[in-house]
Length: 120
Image 1 (tube, rainbow, N blue to C red):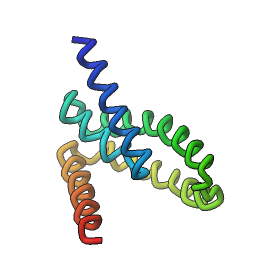
Image 2: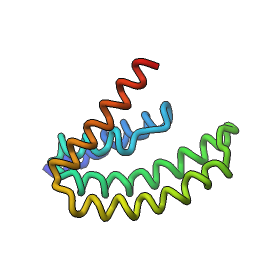
Image 3: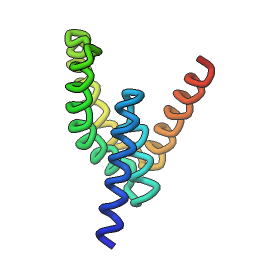
């Protein structure tokens, strides 16, 4: 049983890494739904676990992309620092919003992003 869980986690990580390398996404859009659907995490647990994984994925991917000359460091800092304020607010909101509402909002965001990419 533990081996099967470990395999699922490794597959989720591999998919997230692949998507991160190709599209610059993978954490929230791959890890969260996979944890919820395949391992029964609730939305909050999936988001928190995903954030830890994203930290490692993003650090490695950013270093690799920097090696290819694809990173604008100042722009990344100007996006990242204010994002910390958003994280603080978002984490507090997520603690009081019902799990089902979080899942529906997350699904709507993924759907809207999908439609936007298709229409682009």
